[in-house]
Every structure is written in structure tokens, then in C-alpha cells.
Length: 585
Image 1 (cartoon, rainbow, N blue to C red):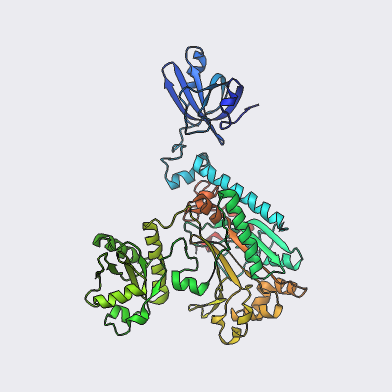
Image 2 (cartoon, rainbow, N blue to C red):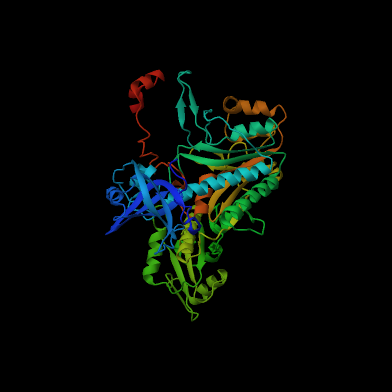
């Protein structure tokens, strides 16, 4: 038996017990006649004590121990004289009678502590060491708890967990696929699934009624903090449901997770905000509603104002930052530099200070008098002491920049509290979006999303105005999940393929199996997929999903620990009839 207890469970009531512990050496402290060792495992840290005088042989062996050595010790639990209130085992220590060295360790490249001295790339290269640190381990424990509670909730709601294939057919819609060559079918390829979409719809045709899966998905796209080439979804589908049935079910699941994991209760229905409203007031389809600061549109006020920047702009809009009229010129210059960043793309920033004495000071005083600025203040519902921040330009680009400015101001004013949660459903998305480059419509979600019934008549004449029976769950400005009611009518699905520019042959080649299944009694159905990694990072209060994945990729899509992706042997390429010379071209 390597251990009778873990390094995190012994307490005062265990005093005088003979115990055996095993773990990693966190630290060795030699203090004259006493040697102290902090022994660590997944469950915590326990202090070991060796008396040099009574056990000189053990003390000499202990002093040769290094960080991360693996040892086993046996001894008696004793009450500590100098208690450590920072750890659960801080009231006790182990008076060591015997210990055995189980394995030695090289000096780790960074300290295995909460506040480590290792940078991101170094810790990712030695991820198995990084996983020993408390913050990383706790994130994965949280991930486990969330997954367990998801399964528990959905099981109680009669969902069946069903695995779907990982080697599937490549489709042209959506993000770029990861492609897998087939040795047995030369010149043909599998794709790794971006989602189990068509399979979960087929399960509804099969009569499974309620399906879910916590599943790995793959997208070959540029990476950022909330993206990885392989990620995990809570993928779900339901038959004989309308939109509100799906929203109610998964709002219930979300509330259950918050209650059980965070002890946070929502005693209200999540608000539902139409896409158009989200874009008008927040410039984003994933608005952060923890704070107000809605956009105010000003274009109509600017007709004939004489200020060319506003007169020539397609869109003029701004936000009111409460209590910020005291901002200095230096602070305002920093905000201007912020909106001019290439990734934000604004040309400049107009500010208006509504001073506490009722006067105004702005960056456009040459063009607008106090009466005009008072009209602006009234439009914004501003009070003395507030600051107006205004952008102008092309509508979509300016709204996006104003969204980023709003979030920046929210962060500066402490309004984006990670311990506060503000969920909402964004609904009524456009069904289609026009792509100038390909000169055709693309599905806003995917080709199987149903249009709203009241918009059916516009499919031929005004397809760009048709709304989708689609919905996203947004929490604190992060899209946590999204889904839609699916098309279950064969004729309507063919119509959708036509709008997306598919020929009959292309539609049959790509999705013929699904269309064929629809001929055999497809029920009305819909579903949702939650980003499991994003959900865990939200609960953990961190921004990057990498920190809640055991073995993540870096921003270049590389696993620096195992050095992947990497070249493969020529023999393997020959088996696949792939020419290295052609690849290099």
C-alpha cells in the first residue's frame, strides 16, 4: 500500500494515527536540528517533520531530496505548534518514522507553485508539470464537475447520450475542415467533424427524440483566446419541439449548472433580445449586458451641421460614460489611440465633457456651440459629470469599433465583474448573409436552419430580410451556445440549397443521404450546441479556453509538448499515394 491517506485529508481528529503518505516533494527546509518537507499530491500539502537527533539516518537522506522527488513516508500525525491557516492540513504534521525514495526528479524548468515563474510557451512545453499546479488542476476539476452535472441534468430530462462518427464527409459550408486521407480508398478523404450536425438530425429521424453528446469537434481556422483547432461541445437535439421548448430546456440546464457549481441562482427568465436590437444598441450579436451604456444614434441630428466628418459619415453614434467628465487630455488621447488600433479601425474619436458646473468642453468646440452640445447631452440622457464618446464612419465598421470602445470603458470603470453573470438569448438572426466575394448568400448558421414561418413568403423576393428560427445563449458578452429549429420539410430544404447557390447535383452529392432520410417521416426538430470549453472558462473566471483544456494547442495551432503537427515518413505518404514534392508546391 503506497498510502493510507492523501496529502489533503488529515486533520486534528487524526492526531496519533499511524499513516502512510506518498507524493511529490514541494519544498525541503533544513532548520538546524529539524528538517521540514512539504509533501504534495493532487489533494493538498502535508508538512513532514524529521528530528535530526532521534532519526539522524532519515534526516541525512531527507536533506538530499530535491523538488519534485517522489517519496513515500510513514509516521504519526501530530498537532503543529505553529499552525498554517492558509492550507486545510495546516493544524497537523507528520512525525516521520520511515520514508522511501520512489523516484528522483530533475530540477523543473519552472516552479510548481500557484504563482509560477514559467511563461506560457515553457509551461505548454512541459504541460505535464504545469498540470501539477493548483490553478490548472482546479480548472480541470471544475471541467469534470460541469461535465458530470450536464450529464446528470440531461439524463433526468430523458436525453440519450449517443456517439457519432469522427471520420465523416467534407462539406463546403462553414469553417475549413481538417482533412484525413484514406489509404484503403486511394485519392479520397475523410473530414474531421466541425459538429455532429447531420448525425443528430438523423437521430431525430430515427426516433431517438432527445440526444446529447459531449463531443470533440475540429475546425481549421485562425486561433485566438476562445478558439482551439479541436474543442468540445455539449451537442443536443430534440424532436417535436418549437423554439421556446429548446430555450426553456437549456435555460433550465444553465440555471442548474450555476446553482450546483457556483451557488448562483437566477430567479427570472433569461431576456430574449432580437438580433437587430443587439446590433443597434451594442454593435454585437453577443452583447455584454452586465452594464448599460447603450449606443445612441446621432446621424439624423447631423444633417447640415457643417462638420464634414459627421455629414459625410454613413453612421454617427456614441456612448455615455457616467462620471467620466473628469478625464484628462492624456486619458482621452489614450482612448483615441485605442479606437485607432488596426484591429478596431476607427479614424478618430470625438468627446464631449458635460462638466459638473453644467458647462461643456469638447473636441469639436469650433463646430458646435453649447446649445448644440446640450441637445446631444439630452439625446444621451447625460448628467453633469458625464462624458460622451462619439464615432463616425461606415455603419458596420463604426458599430464594431463603438462596441470595442464600450467594452473598454466598461472594463476601465469596473463594470465587467467576473463574479456577476448576465445571461440572455439573442434571437431572430438573419437567415442568410450576402458575400460580396462569391456574390451569393451564405447561411448565417448552417444550411439546415429553418426560416421563421412568418417570413416564408419573402424567401423568393427578399431572401436577405428573412429571419432564422435561430438563437444564441450569451453570458457576459461571450457566446456560450447556439442552435436553431431545423428544416424538416424536404421541399423547403431544397429551396434553401437553391438560395445558397447549390446545384441539384451538388446538393445531392453533399447532403443526399440527409434528404433521403427526410423522405421517411422526419419530425419537427431543433437543437443547440454549447461551447463546453467556453462554459468552463466562464465559470473559472478566466479569458482563455487554453487554461481549461488538459493539453491545448498554442496560438499557431501547435502542440509544443509533443511537437505536432510534424512531417510523416515517406513510406506513410507512399501508402496514401501522396507526393511530398506535390505538397511542397
